[in-house]
Length: 276
Ligand SMILES: Nc1ncnc2c1ncn2[C@@H]1O[C@H](COP(=O)(O)OP(=O)(O)OP(=O)(O)O)[C@@H](O)[C@H]1O
Image (cartoon, rainbow, N blue to C red):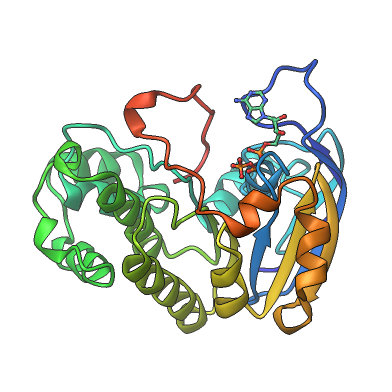
């Protein structure tokens, strides 16, 4: 699915109407099947950008087109169909505590199911083999029937990513997928996500704090700061000077360790979610 944003402005999904805009005049065109990393300092607007692309947040100004359709101008039924072809993996996946991993992974397919089938799948997971296959890509196959509240933060994050592999989506939007992963798991997760997107010809947009991973795994890198697009370059053209400009006043983020993972029990403010 291709993506066109034109002069988009928007607030963070949890922000009040009086808050400053988190995105300001962002224009971006992404071809179907492209893989793009979005980098930038904390608060740059990366998450807000993904929510606009996920049709979870209506832009305050400007337009967004997904697969040639403006999600905010089509009839509700068409918007629902459009959302069925999107997958948003938040940094902290919304996993109900007592749920089994198998059910949590297969929830990635729920938007494609009818009401009865999706309710039934909560109690009788219908395709455990598919979930196991997706989990095995993240070294988690043995956790298939564990409860999600007995997993570590990094394991929960990988369960959230495994959902994307069963989603059948043609636009994968992934928010800081490596924030709770050790370097080996992070490398594995990046290879799996980019390999899967390529194989399924899905478009992949991924926000990252790990600049080295963005440059290594993505052919195209977009830099955001203070809600504005600072650059949109092939990875090979992202020089140390370009990065220093992007992270001006935030150089610790470029040189220091990745920001700390926010534990799910820290209970961030609820954000309305319209997709997985
Ligand atoms: N929960 C919130 N309530 C109100 N405003 C918020 C909230 N979270 C973020 N914002 C505002 O939205 C702006 C953009 O935040 P966003 O999360 O999109 O940036 P980000 O680049 O993803 O940051 P990070 O890398 O720290 O996750 C922030 O600068 C902040 O002003």
